[in-house]
Image (tube, rainbow, N blue to C red; front, side, top):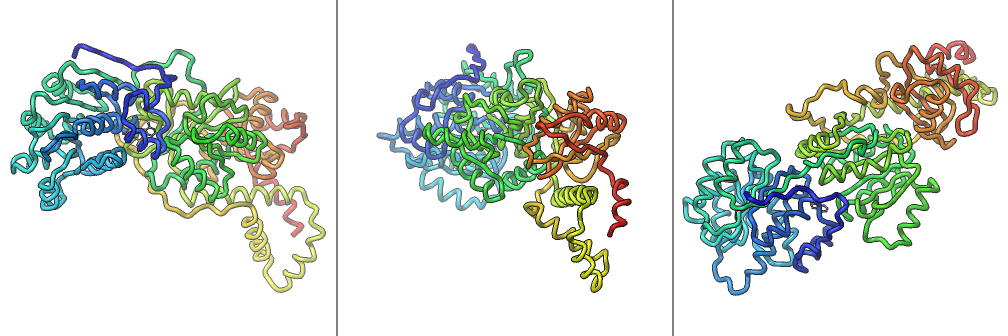
Length: 574
Ligand code: AMP
């Protein structure tokens, strides 16, 4: 391998059209809502179109599939005229049947206007159907090594016309014991072939394959560039592993728990932006879409609504969000793992400015955990793995909010007008039942009922297990239920969403007035008319004292320990 190439800057504005792709492919990409190439696509597509061998160190989530599929499709389309053979021109080897299906679907999506025949072949599928399809002729085969070798042995998969062989997820294939099969297949392919190898990791066995089968390859390594010191902002970073189908519900719960003043949710494509905006609006959030397909006027309108506070969620692509500077942004949410660590750093740089607390949340699919690791390596910052709050967590959290609201009312008093209602009902019902009915009514009017979708808890892969004592660990625990972190107590602050209070206002006031460090302030929950903030038990009295004379949002506020013990005296009134 003589030529080495490393990363380009994350601010590279190369478009798909600059990569020399055919109009049919550009159209398919536009239809899919891809706004710009990912870093690996930017670097790989040109050399691959030029026929170079390529070694790409890239995990799932980087856009590597399109990085090899687009050039393969283009080369096929360029060579189609005058082609008589019906044997495949490209063979993509992948470790699993799921990946065979996925990659083959990706080829279909990108090549839909080209009329290309793509066939996935894998073990477990009836061989008869595969034989039939191979007999009719296919252009591109996506296969697991074992089944590919089987067909080669039968003479049903002929490799004489192959121009390109792609080894996708080579490390996984070797781990699964496919080393011999892969070598046997490669030996059957023409010497003139182009060889492309993608692998998330580069153990020496993969290197062995590279040395034996790749010639003068371009090497691309994603996630290698280290962030400049101080470049990564101080942001509380966490990630949830969740299957794609459950992402909208997971996002809803994370938003409920985090209660951001203003959040931006990043999606990969325009389609995803539109769909997710609709879904989140259906779930009771005030979401606005922002993507590259919108006019300047539409974009201005959206930004206006965000600034005016009539929208609280911006759903955007990277391209659309470029250059946006939103003062009040508290949360960046990655609906997918970004395609490169640099994109991640860029996104989360939108919060955590000027000493304010910023929060970055990433929803990752199980297969994307490697990308998260790469991001941690590059940013040199810990991303804490969290569990999606369960339906039970959300229910108990809502009950906790209702309890706190009722407690506030009990302390305020002023019930005389309602006494007659209670007294007449008490003639007929037990007084506790009357109270229970009132609580139920209050509870139901306090906001949206949580969804009752069961989101499977996906365990982290063993390699990913980390100790949870790092920065941010243990914070906001109570946000996932009615639990309070050990050694912490909750303070009740009589100012809520209705007063425009945001987490950073509370953190600012508490830190400013009491001298408590921001990192010692735990979970913050903001309800309509009050907020609950966790502080270390030892500091509680001091914080209460300090806030007694302070103002938040220009208002004097009541602050006290949020505990049952304060209520009994008033309960006598019932
Ligand atoms: P991969 O790393 O190949 O598994 O791709 C990860 C995901 O990114 C897939 O869902 C692709 O559809 C999507 N994707 C790939 N390239 C782009 C792009 N340039 N813009 C937006 N999404 C993309």
